[in-house]
Length: 234
Image (cartoon, rainbow, N blue to C red; front, top):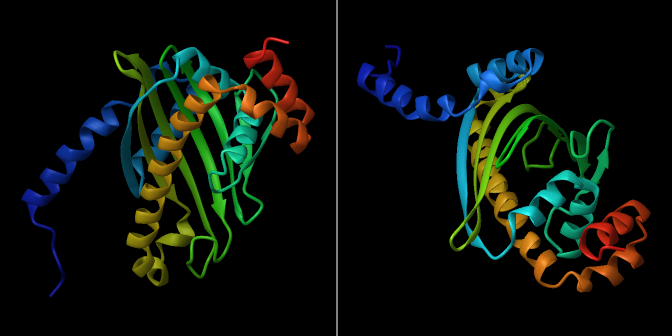
């Protein structure tokens, strides 16, 4: 006898997902990106959201890091957060299109498709090589990320939402036993990354001099120049 989801459960699930979908500002996206984002959200396998507790860092300092991902990735590495990403900007406005690579089989390209005060929307394409997430196949996915941030009475706070559509290859029968695990790993990873973004921003603004020497030793001239301009005003 085929398994059927009760109608009440379907309505409950639809009601839970509707507020998330409603918070994607489709009407503010350029037409091409609007269609791409709608497609990802419409066929999303996972939806997730997380918030950060207040951090003692100014919103302006965080935006410096958002707009300079190569510097942000270098400071992330110096804080010894994992994975130790390397970032590469790919032209356009600052922070508009960039890629990340942990040099261990996890790669992604982030397209900033909407920038407003306190709001950034990204369309992300990523891949984890076979075994990178402890599953016996490579995982490719596209994601819409809506990142809202503000400076509250206790400091910087943020709210991040994601919709992830896996590659069609992952929808086959053989991959089904792994889908719950993949979703859990993704949710855990996103929450971890989002929490640490605010944390290393706090470090950067409270003790910027501590980053200067290590950045010199690491030897990325672009990250060093950006750091000195943005945080030391050289």
